[in-house]
Length: 104
Image (cartoon, rainbow, N blue to C red; front, side, top):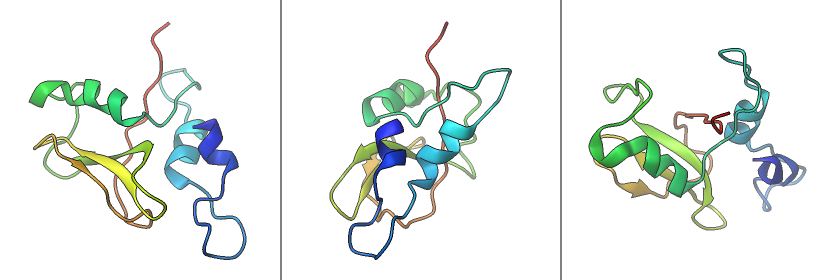
């Protein structure tokens, strides 16, 4: 997450574009914790939990979550919490974010 925040999310457009999903997680303070981050593809697989998503995931309206894993220069990686499919939407596609943290 820290690496994404420091990097330009779009090397084609002039200036520096933020990685909004990573920045959101880094800025998050929830449940008295501030060490949240955007999970990698393998980590979101643990949240998907073989088709039984953990953490009160709303699989009706917000079921595709960004990961910190890059698909290509123009595409990120996301996980569909209903089907389990790993998708590679364009980085400017609006998707939900599920921030995670390491357990104490």
